[in-house]
Image (cartoon, rainbow over all chains, first blue to last red; front, top):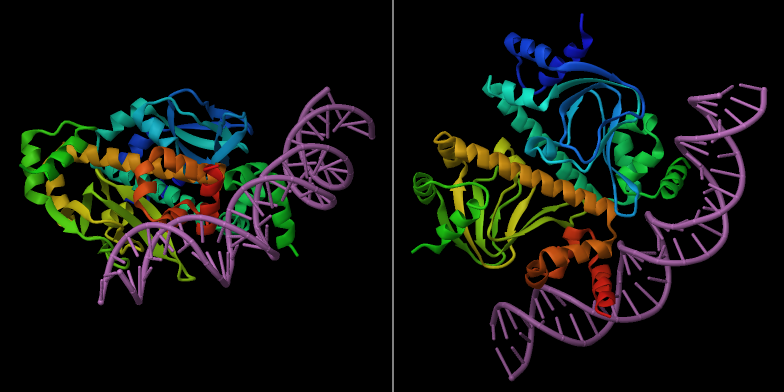
Length: 194
Length: 194
DNA sequence: ATAATTTCTTGACATTTGTGAAGTAGTTTA
DNA sequence: TAAACTACTTCACAAATGTCAAGAAATTAT
């Protein structure tokens, strides 16, 4: 009994039906992986090799800026798909690293296999467009949050929407993701707990 | 001789070829509109009726927050497609108003007609996905800019990339878009000019 | 041209957040 | 268990930005 794929199918079913045939295709092309904490599963500078589904664990995207600082641009936990979408689809080298913050269980499908399975049915295309739209909406909301909310409000919102991230991800990654200095974030946290 | 459509075709050709047949379809379904300054072409609360191509002029998206403040979330000038993408595609009521900052020449296609023309060819689907990806990338970059750049740096970047927006759009809209208080933006501008 | 309106700037002061160093606590490794 | 490392907090001070009111400048309407 493979709970990885059950997790995957349950997640997909949130948006679309997934016929048995398609489940078989998934089982054929998605491969389970187990990564330990601090593994870089896709390095910057290369075209992403895989489309990833997080079964469990926490993964961040980060890049190195001109001053050599790590900038965390995204943090995700399972169950969820994630990838450097634009680079994955355009086959251009990504500027981002994908980093396992904790031990992670993934299901991964190779780029080429995505092209193959895409020809098998319209369902996948529809699903892909929906995922793209979700991602678009997420990025848009994030940019609005960062233009309209204070550092404290951004932290409160993250804590409310993703409490498990606060509990499982080191605060300096969270600080970078929120665009707040780690010291300032610490101060904000201590103010809030009074 | 219709310069509106020449502008449209030239813009599309930046990404894909556009056969004569498809040009005819465009001429059939896209309708020219002329709006005067300060017209709201799509109000918040409704499902967007049109997909828009700006031939000339400046348009912003804005919504009203809980405190009654106008928040400008996007500013576009021609030539360019623009829409409240997620609401347009999902047929859900938008929370955003589309506001002509200046007199605007548009080409518009109705939602239903997009569905019709989509069935006519794969080119449009490919083009749509590319536009979606562009939009996704733009939103992502914007959120990164707002987490990593100071107010002054954001203004400098906008001025560099879109000098015509600085010259043609009132600064309080720009300030809102950049997430800067209008007074602070004025100070930043005066510091820069020294 | 005058008035009315909108847009932009300026200034004093408040608040938020950044900076960098130091120190504490917790966790991992040997 | 000790040592090493990582994560987190705290502090004093600096810098950036917000707030709000007043007024100047520019634009639009009468």
